[in-house]
Amino acid sequence: MTGVRCRFAPAPSGSLHVGNVRSALFSWLWARRNDGTFILRVEDTDASRVTEEAFRGVLEDLRWLGLDWDEGPEVGGAHGPYRQSERLGIYDEMVGRLLTDGAAYRCYCTEEELEERRAAARARGEPPGYDGRCRRLTDAERAAFEAEGRSSVVRFAMPEHEWVLHDLVKGEVRWAASDLRDFVLQRSDGSPVFLLAVAVDDMLMEVTHVVRGDDLLASAPRNIAVIAALGGTAPAYAHLPQVLGPDRKPLSKRHGSTSVEAFREQGFLPEALVNHLALLGWSPGEDREIVPRQEMIERFDLARVSSNPAAFDVEKLTWINTQYLQGLDDDELAARSVHLFAAAGLGVDPAMLRRAMPLVRERVRTLRDVVDLLRFLFSDDVAPNDRAAALIAGAPAGYLKEAAAALDALPTWDAATIGTALDELATGAGLNRTKGWQPVRAAVTGSNVSPPLPESMELLGRERCLGRIRAAAA
RNA sequence: GGUCCCAUCGUCUAGGGGCCUAGGACACCACCCUCUCAAGGUGGAGACACGGGUUCAAAUCCCGUUGGGACUACCA
Image 1 (cartoon, rainbow, N blue to C red):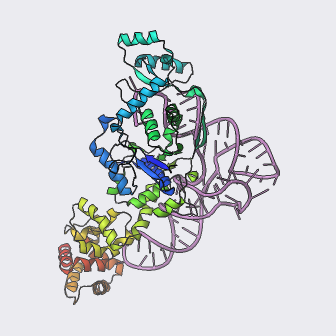
Image 2: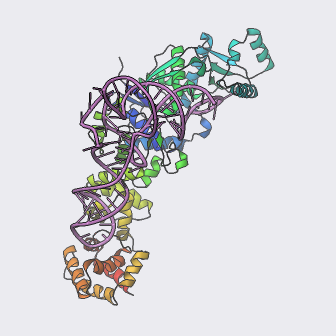
Image 3: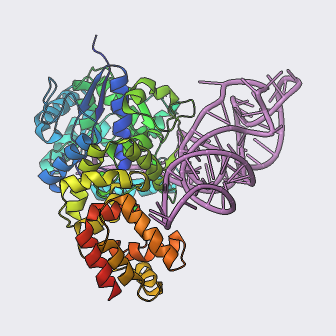
């Protein structure tokens, strides 16, 4: 008896969008939860649109998210190959079997004819699917079409009875026989259609649980029928509700930056993204929100997955991200930020970056915030932003010049000493700490917002601080 | 149009007949803390779509209405 086998079968369209990732995650969680096998299968039969780069993007995203696969591209497995483009021969063979068994038939209807009859059926208020005409062709008629040189597709002869699916999250779903019409398995150019490939692969790969979006719910009975016709055992199905965008429309390219890549570039941690996605349609119970991976695996249960759609909430993701960010130690936080500094065109001194971590940890929501907050350390271009310029302009006459002199005279350069000096300076000018420190902050960092000032200045070094303050004073 | 799916605070959810004058989280508001910004703390506002049933009792079960969504291809 084989254990639980789950799969994720994305079309390689570049970076995965988070709705797909949620499906991948739940499938992965179910496999892990049951000490089962997680399979990655790439649905790349639509060769025209698939690039090697898009394929790599999918693998990269999954790895970044920590959704490791036991069978699939680059890791192999006993049920390969795992790219549908490499399985074309298998689909051919299966179509042949279906044809000889009479479970499928050649259909010679042209697109125009189909369209016409569809429109007519619809006008009569009947289900618009294929009417089954070629299913009943006589040998003579078939021969005539062949002689005529008509091209043909292979259609599946859908058994005419009611279909019942016991979906793991939707419960019992029924379809009347009349609603499930004969569908195309193989196009006239010989290429397999999704419905065929999925069924064949799930069967051959011995998948036990198909966890996917509920936009595929209606294709379940077709998948099952094909597998049955092939003599296989159909897997159990769990159709997940859609992930919605802020406008409550299914999340799609229309919502712009919803790709894993985009979130990574915006400075989100994979564990935060995973955590948020896990909470969409599933709840760990006990009012838990932050759920570490291991615990997520232990608590996950398809039976507890909700069947109503959930909207992806960047605000909540951001909050979750800060929770994880605060849990990172200095080395990790620094290491995870480095690539974003590079992306921002900033070269970093690793030691200095590392020392700055305690200053920013509790004031960043994304890794990009780390870059924004620390930019002044790694770039001497600190032209003040508008608010900073206003602070500098609003300082008492000669205030910054005085500050430079006082700081220059300090016996030692450490946060405590700097802080005391700044306070004395402020009191001398009749200002409170807030008012007194802000102009200095603006001069040193170019911004009205920064990590704690004395500590920041210690890190920056006396010379660079003085240079900036004098420049601002001028 | 047909078939199917879905319906608790703005959002994610807990809830699976009495424990609910509906709990938690994000966001929001106020206050506290405070060198800016955050983080943190305290408090606040905020929901069972509607209408019928069933039942001693319904957010929870059933039906309908309304509203969303999916599918309805030689797309996946």
